[in-house]
Image (cartoon, rainbow, N blue to C red; front, top):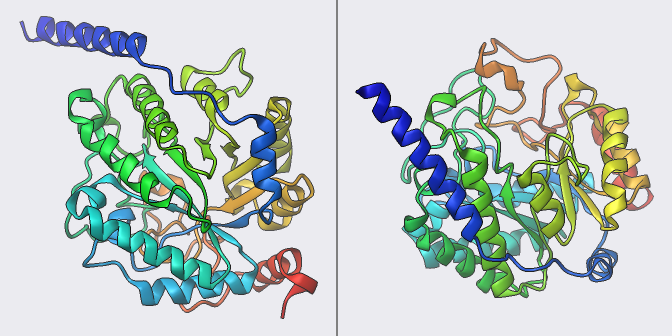
Length: 377
């Protein structure tokens, strides 16, 4: 009886997902490619990092009122400015908004003011499908020793992702955030959903839904529709990250992202030949390109090999990580299986030590030479 009930639930769930996909309203067309190119031409070529303060273990700890740390943020963004970074990619979280909507928006405004002080634009990420699928507000756990990004949380998480009837709050979140900052010149763009079909096979496979890519496609379409309804002056995007990026062979999620993004964004942690191959797949789409995640030293993705190429190709670039801290992304992805002991050599991600000194002074010198006028100070 139990096996029969499980199979029944499986088929009912699959049927429900299929029906939702069929009924999904149109998300609206992207900007004309000329408008997207004009937007990018009007802004400096982005070069920066994915940013989380060193004292935050995840997005909730960054944005909740009790742990939001503008003094540290100001100091760390000053370090970013000193390296020549002119942009940061920053993850938001729907729970931080739902617990305190007006306070959350005010903290976003304060963050933007700090970034502007350091001549840094912001690419905000609205939803994220990676790592812990069961987020909760309030105090966050301490990092697990030796494990990469051990307490990062998904947004919205599996419970809301798989319950369309409960997603009215997500619509309010998206429209509230974009409505507040839709014409804010400090915002470079909106990355609506990070890796929506990531199955977290290395970290949380037992907690994930068996229909994740299908559920995520539903929310991805809705999020684009909600965002288009607001009509921000900044471009919308959602980055492709795995599989085939040829529209004729791409998955449904990847194809939707490529067909609906104003600026095409993507992730690539491979060496230079992999990066060049991916760029070649995307160029025929005729849109500006942003590489919103790269730089994994042991995999051959380094500043020295990748950043000069991205600058030459006029592609925006955001490395993963900045100041080593509670996210522990100096450790590799495989530390989920075998936690690291001691200092990794080389670091996987991250650029600076907690005191602001560079992990590799040669990297810092290269960044200043590539990104600062006349090579910087």
